[in-house]
Amino acid sequence: MSEIRFVPAAELDTDKWDACIKADPEGLIYNTSWYLDTLGVDWDALVLGDYETVMPLSRREKFRQHYVFRPFGIQQQGITGKDADRPEVLNRFLEAIPAELKYIEFYTNARNDISKVPSAWQTKENVNLILRVAGSYENLYSNFSSNTKRNIKKAAKQNWNIFEHDPPEVLLRLFKDNQGKKYPVDDAFYPAMRHLMHVLIHKRIGQVWTLQDERNSTVAGIFVMTYQGRATLLFSAMDDFGRENQAMFHLINEYLLLACGHIDVFDFEGSNEPGLQRFYGGFGAVERNYALLKKNNLPIPFRWFK
Image (cartoon, rainbow, N blue to C red; front, side, top):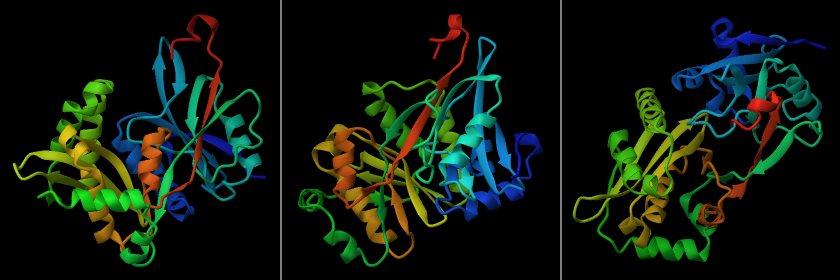
């Protein structure tokens, strides 16, 4: 059986790494070498054989203690490649994580089977919802819930204008002035997301869609990135007027109307929050869940620093 080895990011064969990610049935953009590099975090990897199966490790240091974490801009990671759906393969990778990484919060992907993860690990299932976008828009629309159809019709009564080329700053400002006041985020969040969005736009796989009302005020917006036929809702924002007038129903419906025939999957990227689950599910999205694996081997004085 091939050995799993620890490889610093600087020593990776990125061509082989990215080929492994691309060939995987999930093929998640989060695990590509260039995406991880764009996030500006330190990361290394575990590699099985000749890049048959791989696992990224995003890491930080605090109080001289090294730990694995999930950076901004990533939902799932896990192991990718050959036999990534076998529980014993996942366990081999978990055992191969260097002992110096004392605290680990690692998010799997939907292929990974956590049913046999050792009891030393805490596990938590996280909800993700995806929408298969094969076929015509008419077929897609027929699977929308009656509530979603009603809200789309209600939203259509507004005099909306959709813009497809606003800069990320417009979307981030909308979030900061609205959701950001209710749910404060780390100071590093905004510059990190701004940089990521600009890189994705430059690579022609990211796009900002914004919705303006008749006063030319931006009331809602989304950022979607597309990789390997999978369009992922990376980020969204909305103000109170947009919420009251079902702006997000309108915006996502218009995106899907144009995306049909060009993508295979629309990934809503969440959520564990029941209200968002109902919203995404109303478009016909189904669960494709992943897990958080957590392990805390920190010395007692540092055990509660996270």
